[in-house]
Length: 107
Image 1 (tube, rainbow, N blue to C red):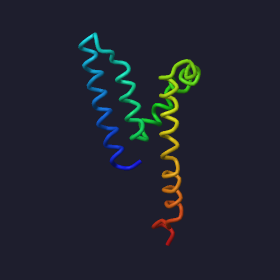
Image 2: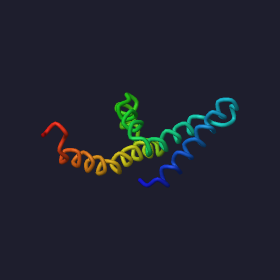
Image 3: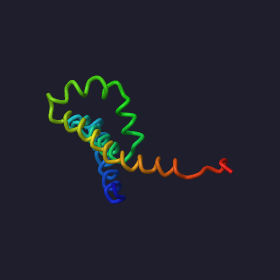
Image 4: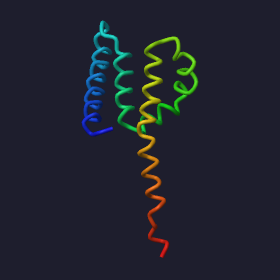
């Protein structure tokens, strides 16, 4: 993912987070969808957050069961899976480069 897409996702995540916080104060605006969208946007940028979501009990146990019953849950599940697949080749290439480099202790 290039830098421009990351910046756009972070800006959208902040906007959705602010709308969710406004929804906590003003009961007319729903807050949960905005918080979910914020997490989805940040999960596309942050590998740490994406891995933390995947390790959570909610993701592992409940989301796969109900993803076929709701378009929103299906989108959340698929977007988290797709975001992980986008970054997987980059991580593999970086780890292979580290394996091929000699360490300072090999002398």
